Image (cartoon, rainbow, N blue to C red; front, side, top):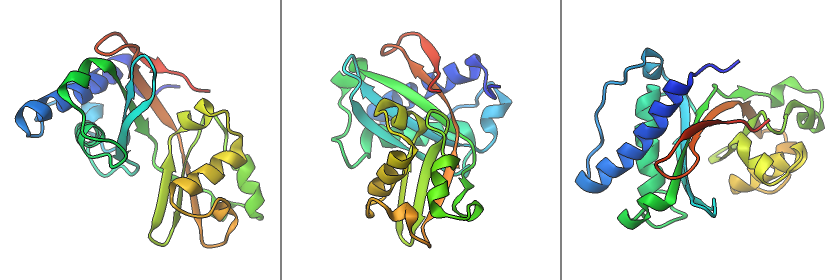
Amino acid sequence: MAEFSMGEGEYLVRLARKSIEHYMERRSVLEVDPPYSKLKIPYGAFVTLSTYPERNLRGCIGYPEPILPLYKAVIRAAIAAAFEDPRFPPLAKEELDRVAVEVSILTPPERIDDKVESRFDLRRMVKVGKHGLIVRRGVYSGLLLPQVAVEYSWDSEEFLSQTCIKAGMWVDCWLKEGTEVYRFTAEIFEEEKPRRRIIRREIG
């Protein structure tokens, strides 16, 4: 069952876009008082920007842990995705009408490597289309959202391996003792087209 209503999801997606526009114009962080009390509770959140209609990644930054009220996490993640993602140049004003905004609301990460007898059993603990992944080892850490595995048609083993690569580690790091593996789920809301209707994205 969905935890967030369409009204709450629509508000967050519009808030993400408005935060980007506000920062672009004024170089300051938008301040709001959200109309939904649930959005003031700490949650992990990511904001993803995609080119339209190509749907190529244009920026993705977020907070895996529930350390900020959800609406503040979305505001900060939106600004970071637009202007601070090291993989891309800062978003330009002329791009605003050519990028679609997506907000992923995350459940708290659940450690799973300490729940299996064999590291190979991690494959059955990860359900593609449901779970996102985090791997951590020392100073290295990588996260992939649930929708990524579906977009690339990965099975659970490939998903684990690609998360290791995202962390800057070797491809089978998830098999090594000492590597922590976490899973989480996400509710996703996105613009069908830039500035247009907002929908709940189903990835299962």
